[in-house]
Amino acid sequence: MSSVGAARIVFLDGWLVSHLSDHADRENGIEVISLAQILSGERIVESALYEFVTERLQERATLGSDGFTALNSALAADGVVIHVKPGVRLERTLEILCVSSGDASRRMSNLNHFVFAESGSRLSVLECYVSMADSDHLTNSSMAFRIGSDAEVDHYRIQNESERAFHIGSSKINQDKNSRYRIYSLSIGALLDRHEVNESLDGEDSRCELKGLYLGSGKQHIDNYTTVTHACPNGTSDEYYKGILDDSARSVFHGRIRVAMDSQHTDAQQQNKNLLLSRNAEADTKPQLEIYADDVKCSHGATVGQLDENAVFYLRTRGLGEKQARAVLTRAFATEIVQEIEIEALREQVDDLVQQKLGLNAEGRKFVWEMLPSRWMHSMFHWPMNSMWMPFESSFPSLIKKFTAEIWFIWTTRQAPKNRWPSQMP
Image (cartoon, rainbow, N blue to C red; front, side, top):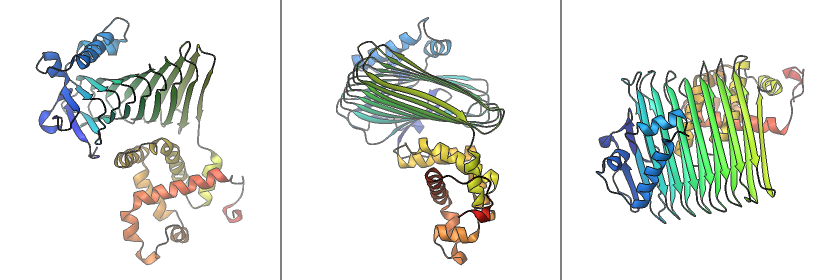
């Protein structure tokens, strides 16, 4: 991915690349340190930070952990430790770019990242995994957060590795009172991808948002396991995951919300929606609630379905072919999650990745030029027809966004009649 104006920390095959990283202590009140330096004793850090790192490594290496988590801790070699001191509000996003090289075939990378955000601080972190070649490697990554009282952390996670790769990831978050954590997860690469989120609201009035989008094709398998524990009163959690599956892809969503005893006035919401684009695609979903308090507001739900044929029909009456109509509706389904990303440059890059995965870039040009009536284009874009080529070609992404938004608005505000010819439509 191209830069989004962030301070970038680069790892290649599991090891920090210093000369490609902007990881020096250039910001007041923040430390960005290599985990290898801490483990070797080369870098001395504050006792609270050291205890946080070592406790997490020891906790995950116990017999009670799953195999990949224990393996990750046992073979911990490198990663990044980010320490934001009290009251510091970092404006720039910190990007952790983890790259698997072309020589990474049949290799395993074990990465351990830690974020310690003290009280009153604010931080945005972008965690990105990519491959330089179509190699069959294993990435086993872990990220741990400790968020102090009144602190805010935005976490963006993008997994776009080779479609022959295997990716196992986990995120563990502990929040103090009146803190906020938000994660936006995008999974589009790897033959097998599993991401596990363990969120614990340990202080009163703490809030978290978990938003995820996963797109699978071919024989991809995508797992999302989430556990949100409300350990104190007045906690709020909002969880929303959407998936799009084509060919023989399969997804598993297992979401669990646990409200502990005496965690009164908890507000916990959970949704999972899946869109199947082929007969062989499969989505398995299991939302789950465990409630041990009696004054709470909790809900959960899941849907698995296909595109509405009435909506496809409506777009076809407006000049689109069936393939293009389905592509537009599929993108509209994904856009609901993409639009939640607040960083504009990152939102545009994620939107481009989604379009590439769905094959919308080339198809979009094709259906606009070959399928849409010229008079419809003229009325929509308000350009003279004899000078439309150049501005349209240079502004195509924004036009597709406009087109998708307008079609989605039209469809959600009215229903197309069934079994009517295009000439009979208003």
